[in-house]
Length: 626
Ligand code: COA
Ligand code: AMP
Image (cartoon, rainbow, N blue to C red):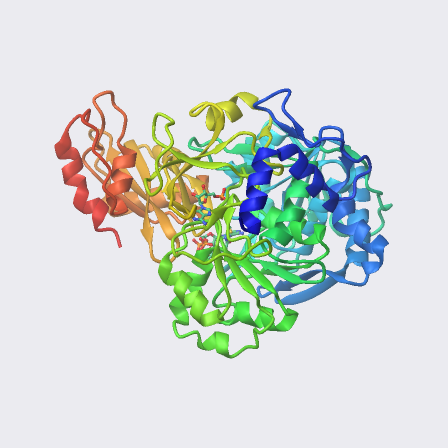
């Protein structure tokens, strides 16, 4: 039995023993005496009697052990452009001041702080500062519309919002304050203060309720880390569900720290002193786990990059950074590699840099197509690893465990379930499928440390969304199959969630935006294939009786409505006006069937279809998208 299989088996047979041993990777204020608490199942808890501080584990302990001069964080902005770097000592001191500033603003243990910032070091500092004082951060991605930000403010009810004056996109500067003001106007919750980091690209006019970061943070009394229970919340991260209302994934403190620290060695083979670069955004789970927490927990150097893969200034942006900082491992989404491949198909830009420090490329966030895998493997000459996980799980469910036991790559597969994850493939009735047959991917409970513990303030929705469809199992929402070698192949979502350029979106939220148009009677949004972004949303709209708008104008208005209500990140550009939508006799729109047709898959058309000719009429529209 190989190292991976041995670990996987032990983790499932004796989760308590396995994770208690793994907990040695973390410094505890009070060591846990046991790992798994099943008393309130399905609300499992990890390390119920342990106490720790995640920020102290990410920063102070490395300084205390004599590694204070090691580089903790390198910030490289291709957008400003600018570069800064922080040693562990410097980062600890900065974070302690931010923590002190938050405390002076009245933030206490358990209070929520919304972080609305682009890829600047202060975003990372604010997250760690919250962890330092036991506050719960909730980071909001900058590409969302005010309505999405408002929903998060409304639900999290933050004591303080920490924002930056702007984000910088290649074609425009995105002023954050107007978005924030609009969001606050939509919410009935008022934070006590908003702390604003002024960026030169666009400074904000600070009105009442706003404080300037530079007036508050540099003079703040540094705060020491507070000891919190392992089961106390570390953060809330909102993610798209099947309805328009985002789900507040709640992460605990102890399980998260243990799982992430372990994953760095076992999966990524990255250790103290190595340079690890995750190219994502702090607003996504990938950013939380692998830009901020995991690399710092193990004493590695994390690169925080503000920019795009291409055009900043050219297709060599990534390789310049690898050369300049000696990056050992990159983690990004396949879409970023496709963007580079499109403008540099022969990888001439790769050859222009010295990338000999690079040991591996990890990709996740969407399906890795075999062509992109091949191109990246050839261009970089390093192992390219697909791995699969979700906001909810917090760290990889299936991966090629490079630190534990590197395995042969199979195109299309995220390799094998990682220790801790008991992955099964079932049919609609919950019966396990034989190998090679596609079905719903579920995970037998308990989920390992680091996975979500519930949804913020909504235990019922947690159970209903993930645990009730297949009792005893977590329902991932993805379909796939396991082959005879135990490799997992993830085929795609079975629900109304889509991934656009690695960004997770709810088609329900996009439909809600379309439905606000007075001419729209009903609509459906599905994900259709896109050569760069993997999938993009495509709208089908039926007009109200008597409505006869100019179709070009209407389409432009619908695109604008989605940008207004969901945000530019939805990348919604394509909408067809159709006479009718296919439905079952009970009136349910056949989204899944349409999705199957658009994606070239054969999905059985339900026998209960109301009028098959409606679907037949749509087939060419669905198939002929670019
Ligand atoms: N703030 C404000 N607007 C943002 C934004 C942010 N943080 N991020 C994206 N947007 C905007 C973009 O400017 C664009 O606006 P536009 O319609 O005015 O052009 C729109 O949202 C769509 O953005 P995106 O899907 O990112 O497209 P893009 O053309 O800017 O870039 C990629 C495409 C593939 C290069 C880019 O998405 C990428 O690098 N993705 C991979 C990495 C990643 O972030 N993965 C996430 C999880 S692992
Ligand atoms: P997010 O919560 O944003 O991380 O998105 C999670 C979803 O992205 C998963 O449920 C999958 O549908 C998809 N996904 C993530 N990684 C992969 C992968 N390696 N292969 C296929 N799909 C993936």
